[in-house]
Image (cartoon, rainbow, N blue to C red):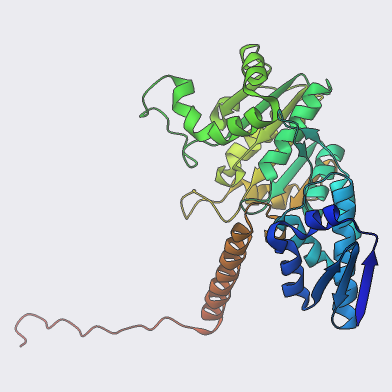
Length: 344
């Protein structure tokens, strides 16, 4: 079968095909088709189903390019994955959700369907839990939503917190004052805010007390009204810490809790506060849970492969332990009795 797209300017073809035709080659490799161009015409050669999917992918990429959106290997791969489910329209719906711009003018948008649901949950609920592996944009998107709410005067301040030094928060042995002690553990939060707000705006609002970055232990005893509060690395909280944090929330506040269950630093016998909260709070109105997966990873494509490989390994290990617990029995080795006194 040969399917044809016509009236595609050569400049537009270069955008959707990528440098050295990187994106076109990825489409060919994934769908087992051949893409041929001639002036303003694109031909896709192959079997019926793959040809139609390739045409749909190219049409979606062209629509993104016409909007001025960046075309990169990540959104090409994501469009290809949705093409298998005949859901390419979701890419355009996701791309239309502009949260804000960075200080350099770069638009911040969700990039996957999972991220779009996560952002919608933040908008629609007082408390949102974003749970998923590294690279899924949990913290960054929450930061963008916080800055947007702050600039729109929906909240009076932004409060960012995370458990410092694993779950114990034992900062005393580190040199320096409190700020110098906790800065290394809160650096990822600073970095995101610098990129979105700019260092000058961030420092000015920090001096006024409108932006606060502090370890979780220092939330105790406070009531947080009219604030956008982000608890990062929540998998490292204890159940008591999580309860303490969630009961700090006052009127007019919005809360986002982010965590990755696969990267716990708690002692092996310690239950995570994030796991307990997921069980205890799942049916309460006004609290939403967004489960992000390896399909929502938006870092380098290799990161997505790493996350998927670890997920497969952990599932295999878990399945092996389950089988052993069901069918295996520990072998008891009888030790020979010690000879009593006088025996040889």
